[in-house]
Length: 210
Length: 210
DNA sequence: GCAGATATTGACCATTTGGTCAATAGAATC
DNA sequence: GATTCTATTGACCAAATGGTCAATATCTGC
Image (cartoon, rainbow over all chains, first blue to last red):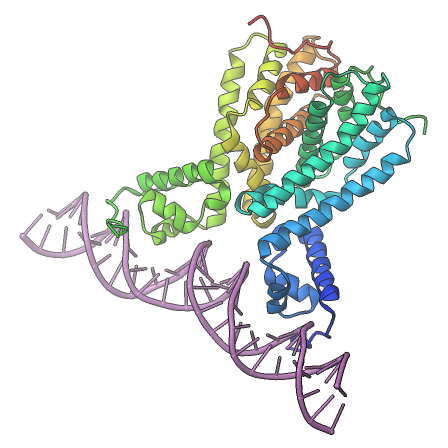
């Protein structure tokens, strides 16, 4: 059947090849989930013999953990720069919630959900999951903390609220991954929920003017 | 090494054997997760040859889906009877949230999380996941609907609020599965969140008297 | 007790997984 | 142009997965 046989891969420097493999793993994870990041699948996508992937990575467990970290830390960084451009904590929190729930990151959500499951049998991945959760929680906590300092939010425990909010949006995203269409009112409803947690008036977090 | 060899399993009626296998799969799922429900693992736990499991089940995919349904529907039934014993919607909602989040069902949570992940490669399981999500949502929606009818809750879309609440608690439970200890304030915080969604005063859902 | 029905099993098979290692090919250096 | 270095590969391996099927053991009805 035509040429299902792979050409010999052009020689690269170790750094280049390592990057190429990491990128292959990353795109594979985003398109088909972390469980699709197997030795052979990564090799095929990178256009390379399976043995080469094994050669460049200590074990598949750590490649999966690194891939997870790569995907998620990029998302965190993206959100952070987005928030930096906004005026105050209230605007930031509103945008934060709406952005996370806007459904445009289902691929990342899939990576999260599979990481929770795979983490039970891959301790390296589990550690990375905890680290990235901490990073996420930190971003949210900073916003909430700033809001409390500015007298805009009311809570005695910004850290706990941040964890709570993180869990909520994770759950809603995971749910959206499984359920049919209908991702309608997620934004406004959770805004009301957050208002409840932070002692805000109803609608205080709704999208401003625009 | 002693006797790692299995005795021949005592003969049973098909109904009995099928039940025995289902129970083995169920306990395995609760102890080690859905991904541990493999042909050989189930056979070992049931004290039976692997071929017998294959004989009694159309495929592992459906055994896994049935096991998921068994675990989750039992939980739904348990909660329903718990709610029936309570006076009104507000008490029911408060207990509902606190009970789901009390951390005593981590085994079921693990089954949920793995079902989300495995469902992407097991359509039978995916269908069952959606069905059980609908069941859960129905229970919650009934409580909220009753509360709205009684003038205790304020929302225009009980169904949406129910979905939202379900997603939130799922996420918080999944998070607790991964994070270290510290499952502290989950109850009261989410109560405030729900109060925000349903237009209740702060503290309206806190545990009564007791 | 004997014969038939059937619950159960061992022996296979194909596939997929992660991983190892000596051999090979290709670029850089002398 | 020959030699050295090394990126890359094919050929393996062990383990685990789901699944099939003829053979066997055991119970039931006659």
